[in-house]
Image 1 (tube, rainbow, N blue to C red):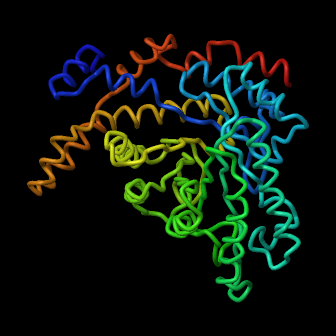
Image 2 (image 1 turned 90 degrees about the horizontal axis):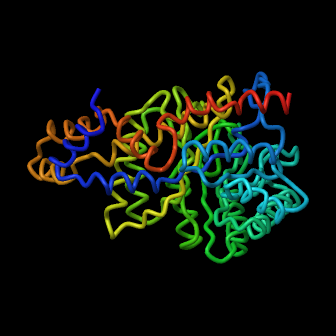
Length: 394
């Protein structure tokens, strides 16, 4: 295994600024989701974990613990009504007292029985109005907690041919999104997510990145696309989508997870680490291009039902750090020259060289300089926190 000194010397020889790489790694930001700290399961069962967070207050405590150990997770996404409270100003203050802040606000337009046949695209105008009122409520919550992201995913769709009119439903979706867009606080963004199937199995009203892009383009500059890594057909070239949206200034955010078959919501980096690296290679390259708007919100959205909640979150954050670190090692100048010569073998080799580099010593050095333990996961296991929350929460 290459130690930090040898890796640093090798990067210097490549013309890489090691100090700049370390600063970019220290500035990396990953938002964790409140719902990732509570009990979760599948369609078949919910598996309870001793000590799992029972409400938003305990979720914030656990998220703060992840941030203290990793140093790069200062914000927590909330889901309404899962995280509903009477006083959002007090919730904001509570988060800040723990060393974190409230991040993206996620409306829930898929659990209420009224949304069985859709929310903003429901044939019933009363249900559409109810859904829109919920979006307005979430905008008000954004203002109360000083959030600048409204994160939208819709389960709206149909299961059978003829069940709904595609064009009419599209018009209703446009109408609802536009009304919510006009209510956004100053400086806030609306991120529109897509999913090609599930729970709708015949059609989904926002089924792909192109549909989400079209809605966002029509809405305006404050609307951007949110990419969930599990929301694509098998074999989709997600890094190509990322590059395209970046070039259009319409990549707003990520929901990071991993998949084997469909929207498995497995922990980040557990199945396809090379894919994650290739995605980060596009993101890292865009950060270096002054012509690209790379203001991207990085968020985790996974359902680690059989893994310990906090450990799984730390593990995912570490995988994201690893992917980003490797992406920063790509020899861009050599890659561009190889592309100009149509040297396909060398192009691939340059990427694989960065991917195959052991960046553990680099990340350990970065964490040490940040005043953190070199291995956040093992630091958590030795912290006494797991035992304490089990004793306190049961």
